[in-house]
Length: 294
Ligand code: B12
Figure 1 (cartoon, rainbow, N blue to C red):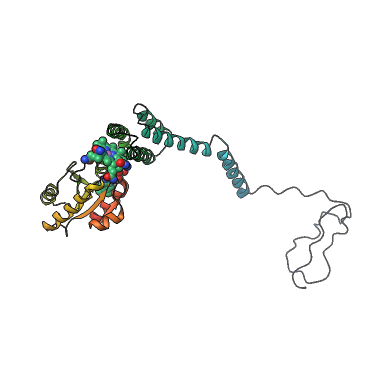
Figure 2: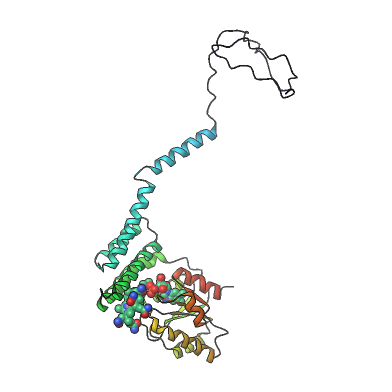
């Protein structure tokens, strides 16, 4: 096919013959000098031209590839991640095994090694769930649950200052409590502290809180948000009773309700007629922000 420039002359090599531009076809490219004025036409093999200097892009690419290779070597990212996972697993195991003396140092060490506070909280909570399962299976007794609660509280003393998120201030008031008949308060306290850290005012009514006390607190504070913690399935009825009490007091339109705790599910939330169900303190913050912050 004509009109696309000449075929390029053969590369110099032992069999190089006369290097002249081909005669046929119009040449439209720019050939500054052919042959170069000071280079005699020759049939002798030419030395290969020197490699062009590396471009900045190639240099950068090489150094990036070198870094990636270094990071992938054992002892770097891969190994660090594995060590962190080991630390997380050890915290869950020690919590499940109720190894009270070991937990604070395991938590400290994990944080110092760069494990995120929320991962440590997740590891502790996973251990608590296993303790609960062992209790259900009859392998642990009430005294073990008490011990587990104590372990969690001590661990949270170390963890909570690191969980605090920047306080944005003035986000509104939340009334919080564990429902009547239920005395579990570790999760509720965690949620309360997290909300405070994120700029909410929290009125914590404690545990085993009857509906009347909640209504009273909502009236006197003017709060527009209520958080209920419930871990015992038989005490779910207390959530329903609280919702009814709010309706009877004419507060339901004004007050949004969120629930959380081991026995709660979105389905339960729908049945109880509450506005949201949260699984952890971060979700709690998001929920109350959606309730109160416009
Ligand atoms: C420690 C513990 C106890 C301690 C509690 C100490 C304390 N100060 O809280 C003690 C020894 C007192 C206890 C007692 C009992 N317990 Co208990 N306990 C537990 C255990 C092992 C851990 C609970 C815990 O602290 N978890 C860690 C925290 C961080 O998690 P959390 O509470 O779920 O909270 C998180 C979220 O749910 C969420 N959240 C919590 N509240 C809220 C609120 C809102 C608004 C939002 C948005 C989010 C939110 O955020 C929190 C932070 O991540 C659980 C096992 C389990 N699977 O939960 C059993 C468990 C809850 N207990 C159980 C039982 C049966 C009992 C007893 C009846 C035993 C008995 N025979 O006496 C008594 C009941 C006493 C009573 N009237 O309340 C059962 C409940 C079963 C059920 N579904 O009904 C469980 C599930 C164990 C089991 N698998 O059998 N318990």
